[in-house]
Image (cartoon, rainbow, N blue to C red):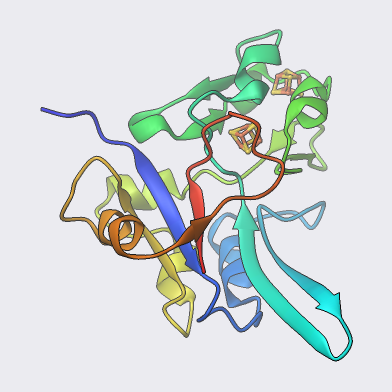
Length: 180
Ligand code: SF4
Ligand code: SF4
């Protein structure tokens, strides 16, 4: 059986920047207000009057080759089910090496002094549910699933739509895909 590889797609034509994803993440994961695991970025390209705006819901990219895991001196950062990158908080010493290494700015130090980041809501996924951001997006802009399963929604999106990855991706193997 092929191993699962979890991924998420963000449809930039559907995302309206309402931040419901970010708020749902905050509530689901009991975040303490020190930072966000999921956020909305708005970028304007071009020169007036030929301007285009991109609205993106962003989070950890759960890289195939995660720099954060490679630099962690204690093994607190590790790869779990379906390639999901997690932090074992009891082992984190708050040295910030992972924060310095992440090309996407996906991590921060929480009020307890340990590294915090998106978990793809693995606790929900293991219970057969979708990540909170996906469930609560009012426009259906987000999809989550196994990119090694050709019948999954993310696989269908990746096969049928143009995708874009962020400029920061320098071979880390990001698993967050932006649909143009
Ligand atoms: Fe690690 Fe950053 Fe990649 Fe997430 S996006 S797996 S925090 S290097
Ligand atoms: Fe590892 Fe924690 Fe240091 Fe990050 S802050 S490198 S997770 S020990």
